Amino acid sequence: MAVIILLFFLISFEIANARIFIFGASTRISQLSNWLNADYPCQGDTIIFEENKKTVTFLDQSIQVTSIILPQVGSLIFSDDSVLGEKSRWQCTRRKSPEKVFFQSNAVFAAFSDPASWLLDKRPLLHMNQVPGANDDVVFRDMGAFQIFIDDQVTVNTLRISQDW
Image 1 (cartoon, rainbow, N blue to C red):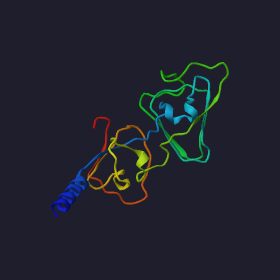
Image 2 (cartoon, rainbow, N blue to C red):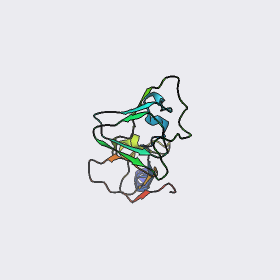
Image 3 (tube, one colour):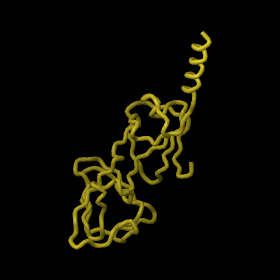
């Protein structure tokens, strides 16, 4: 009987523990994982967005390309310092022949209820604990622009949008 009471107490304590969930998706143009096959644009290349996909892209740094083929629906959000037509450090210099590169962010329609959207510690968790709940703190640390799909009412302990959390 004592073992059952102790087990119940430990489970209750674990359920009451709050965690910090950090939204892991990014729509930054300078993030190399947002480019198909990690093939990011060099000077003189053409950027192509998926035509039939809603896209939110944050131009956090300047970029110099020949052209940008935009999607039917979407948003390009410029930072205060970004300039179209100016090369950034993250960009490579001109290729021998210009190429078409494809922006395909994994962040497009990242879902709140998808555990893959959140950066967590390495402790094993039940599936229901892999997304934020009422006792948990949520941090969106990618300043600029982000997009998240929320398909149901959500309650969290705190919600912060900050690089300095």
